[in-house]
Image (cartoon, rainbow, N blue to C red; front, top):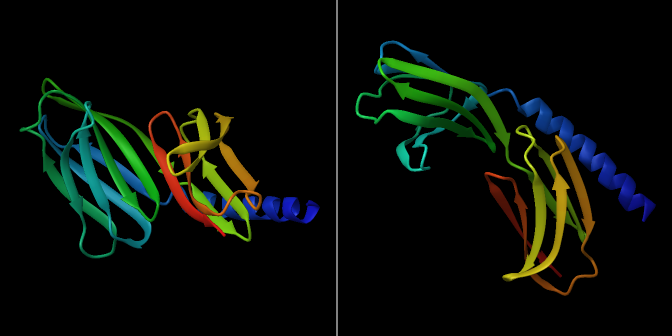
Length: 196
């Protein structure tokens, strides 16, 4: 049991270090040119295909694009004249990392909000042990739920800590397919596994 604990701690440290090194590589800027146009400038430390979306305050996607070729930089002038006045969120995703920037279209003005980074959690299952790490940049309350089909098997409230590293010994579970769901206030991430 001590060996599993030590291995879980070592895994958690390595996963956290790798995730921390990867975070901060993706940068998203919105640079207003006029009251209706702005340059969207995206940069990443390595060449990647970007998934770019803009959603309104109801969560409806008003723009979506995936770049075809890998690149470190992407720049485009956006014409927002067809959008209604209100709040919007520009999200750019690459390699499990998402950076969001909110903006507001007002009378003769585009107001740009702060940049927010979101990393997908890292899950690994091997030899009966599930390991999970997550950087909670927005410090939202987290919960972790295990499901056997649609039936809740186990639930844990994690809280709002920034660095989350968890390990679970699943060797005593019945054989079968399980889903693990990490939930924040605004997102949920699912990991499926088979216990043999």
